[in-house]
Image (cartoon, rainbow, N blue to C red; front, side):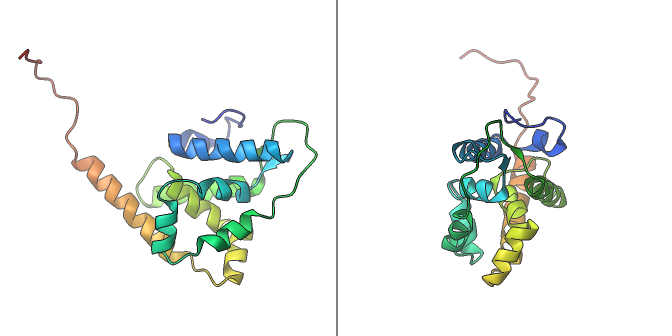
Length: 167
């Protein structure tokens, strides 16, 4: 679980290490901007730096420059304390967990987080104004998650009980 977050929020215990790094980067942006809360736009800005996100967006026909434009609306605040997750961000994280579970995955990876953030109501409204449809991205990410799940269950187990031999 990333530091500086409320441990009572269930989804935080179900994030991959890479997703925790994305949240930590968004938290640092909030600190740098002296904002009271970590908003979905800050998470989106951090996600756009993650390897593989640009490819998934491109394959789904989503122009990354539109998403970058959405992230540019972060204003400087006057907070003096630790930023907390906004209600919108909690909704986006819940969306990400629901999406992961719907695709039979227990851990939210950055692609799942991307779907969750883009599904958050205010961001989804901005995407709709730009005529961006999330369904192709959801389908693409769902296929990637299914492929990862299938390959994980097909890989041999490491619980080999045979004694090691010295050669």
